[in-house]
Amino acid sequence: MSPHTVVLLGTLDTKGEEYAFVRERLHAAGVATLVVDVGVLGVPAFSPDIDRAAVAAAGGSSVDELVARGDRGAAMAVMAAGAASIVAGLVADGTVLGALALGGTGGTSLAATAFRPLPLGFPKIIVSTAASGSTEQYIGASDLILAPSVVDVAGLNRISVPVLANAAAALAGMVLAEPLPERPHRPMVAASMFGVTTAGVTQARERLEALGYEVLVFHMTGSGGTAMESLIAGGFFAGVLDLTTTELADELVGGVFSAGPDRLTAAGRHGVPQVIAPGALDMVNFGPVASVPNVFAERNLYVHNSSVTLMRTTPEECATLGAQLASKAAAAVGPTTVLLPRGGISAIATHGGPFADPSADDALFHAIREGLAGSTVDLVEIDADINAAAFATAAVDRLHAMIERRRAEPPEHTDQRSTPHQHTNHQGAPS
Image (tube, rainbow, N blue to C red; front, side, top):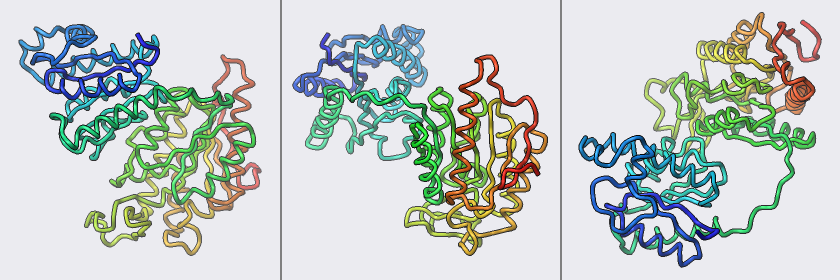
């Protein structure tokens, strides 16, 4: 096998012509291929390197059994599981350096099941008819690339030929590229950011980098929060600076940037030191103003840009959000601090801003205080807005201190939650 080999995964009974073309283009570029056939019913257009029988067996069944059942959905599930197992093995032992698939919604779903778990940075592309629609179900928190096929993957024509050729060239370029130089292995911190918290998070990131950390900033658009939670759970981070928890509001009220009910749980569940703030909980996100549901027509709306409309959360919603944030923070098994920016929780919620609402902020802060009472979480209130330098400094210093304490502890003494912590005001004195 060539030192530069990629796996081609697909149904050779229905898309054999297209796979043969892509295989030819990869070979011409100097990349070898290992073809895995996941078709079930028809005759493959050419002989694969790993046939459907091997894939079905890896999925816990046989081709004859799948054909006899006559259930396409069940067959796809078995072949997806088998393909995932086979591809994972090929990647783990270094046999292949990239992965490519072509398909409609069914083929995309099957290939995504196999490609999505592959390591971050591993080249993986699917040319898909579903690439221009909602893609979260296929990509999840991975770096899988979906390339729009424009036309269906159904024959070679003046549209599909350059699209498929470009996909092959892209994968070949990734595989043949010079290896990246080694980066210094600094401890990594995850940080959550939104447009209205950018200034504060940027200051915090720069301070963390000066302290020797590598900071990965995630944009809190639903998929950003999902990706961050997934990587936290994967053990990538020494600490989490979760200053922008806005996705909780979208999950509660029905905005477009929800990260689901598990947002703000991974660090607590895995004992990762974390600093949390109610950043941008003053808003729920929608698309263009015309897309805002009629039920919210009389609410305080702010057009952020032509694609994003923000809606101010009410005192009642803020009370619920504060209780949720406190509950998730209090459940953490590792060191946790919650910071309250009393000067404003976003760039547009400061005094005189379009989302300034003292009653909503009071409801939010009261619920957080009440929810953390008696817990082992540090609660610190700061007389500054979330984008102020003083707030960023306090957040970083708290997180750095928790990470340093964690590093200094014996492995068997990593739980910081033995006794309730004190609630401190912005000067740091016990209150």
